Length: 247
Image (tube, rainbow, N blue to C red; front, side, top):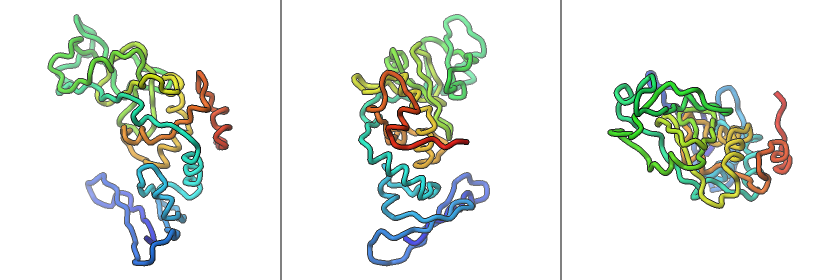
């Protein structure tokens, strides 16, 4: 592989982006690859693409940024894979028919992805029948009603997580997960970690997408050994041997 070229969105009326690969038949070796992304040009080694968790061509990630990723992934860590029960928000099948703008008899609040903030939750603006009757898709109620769950925006390029301990309901513009027993990080501290600038950097450097997918979240490295009862960003970064850039 000689080069990777980002063409952004070259097709009229299509939102799909395109990336070009320039190939040359040569002996297999870890040669340098020229990367052209937006107005930047830099070199990456072939192995740098195979070292990331999903072996994707994250062409937007510079060589300097990739070295930080390599450093982080070299440190012992855990992930959410096989450590959490994930669930989709409720699919009503017809929001206009199933949702109400005001609370009526036998209805309860239901929240959207856009209601989720890093530091809280907007006041409910929609309500749904408490029995969830005739909804198109509903996850096991035990997940919605868990003592603790972490809810996050689904359609977003930014990681936005909310800790819920009041058994709230959410529409499918939000997804959620419940940690399995004995996970080494408590739910509240994990929410703070996932909302941190470091996790946003890792997520963007790897995926740079407008959807927060379960499989992507399950790849993110979590360093439980540097978290006590709560998440302390300075302590966490210091132990990882990295520091935050000043704006």
